[in-house]
Image 1 (cartoon, helix red, strand yellow):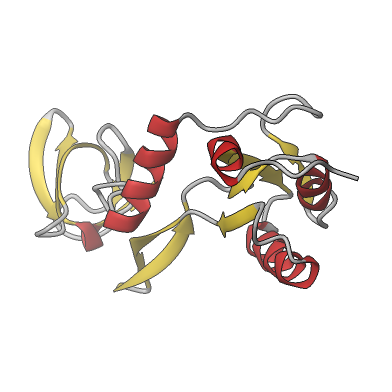
Image 2 (tube, one colour):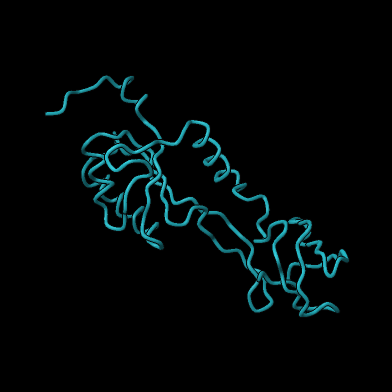
Length: 182
């Protein structure tokens, strides 16, 4: 029988762990873990399961729409106290391939890493640019006088949904609907 540990000691063992999953199974793993936690009464050792997501703007068929994208595809964050039982439950969940760290000794995120990731998720700043473009991305211009030319993104104005691109060494300001990622 497992020895009872004082609550103050147990809280200090609580940390965020990164769990690797099969690609595309992140939401399924979260749902399965949530139901296992409730069914087995593990709320005192497994506190939270998160699939980090962010809203991104996507252009399809000339229309802009907001879609949710995984911040860390193939990974789920679990706030837990690792003991034999909690490790076994998480590790043996369908779709889980293991913890980040060694097989028997998962490595938790540092407090700073966890705080940064969770703050970004709550504030919606996982990527300040929700347009889906990054500096130095290669793009193809799909509308306007430079149509079908290749360019490189040099600056991004997410608020105005504009990009400054370099086309044949000439800076050009374009609306994001005028370009596509290569």
